[in-house]
Structure formats: C-alpha cells, structure tokens
Image (cartoon, rainbow, N blue to C red):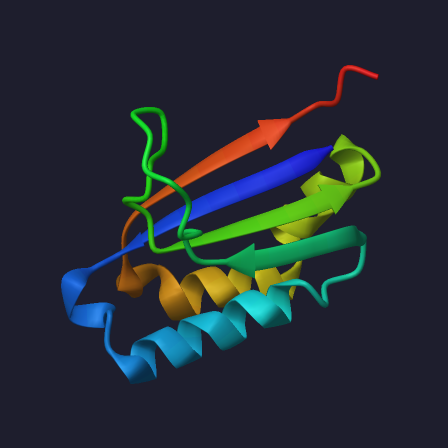
Length: 102
C-alpha cells in the first residue's frame, strides 16, 4: 500500500532552522522498519496547470507491503516522536493512503 502525507508549514516555521529540523525528521521517518521504499520532497517546479496544487510545503511518500505494515508504522515510537516534535510547525497536514488495485 502507498502512504502519502502533505504538510503545510506555519509561516513562522518556514525559516532555515525549522526547515532543516523538519527535513531531518522526514529523513528519519524513512528509517523505520517495514517501509519498502520512501521519499520526501518539496513541490516540483512543473509547468503550471489548473489541476496542479503547489500550495503545500513538503510531501512524504512511503510504500508498505500491506496495511498491517502501515498500521505498525503508525504506532512506531519514532513516528510518534516525529509527530510530537514537529506538529507545532504545521498549519495543516493531509494523509492519502492508496490500496493498489492489482
């Protein structure tokens, strides 16, 4: 299954120090057991089109073998530590989980 998370940072947290801390936190999440592959990044400088949303600051994408692996990730202490450490930095967060069709 695919786990996608989009973060909108608070304006006051878009400074170099907060961004560096947040980026390190995202990198650390990818070390949690059970993740087959993952990446994080910022909006790509793509050609503007009406369907493109570039309003977010960071995205995190992870692939898990199944829902059970993703569920284990959700309660992992390192994931909880990321939330506790960084939740005051984001104004909004959206999660979109995808169960592959094949």
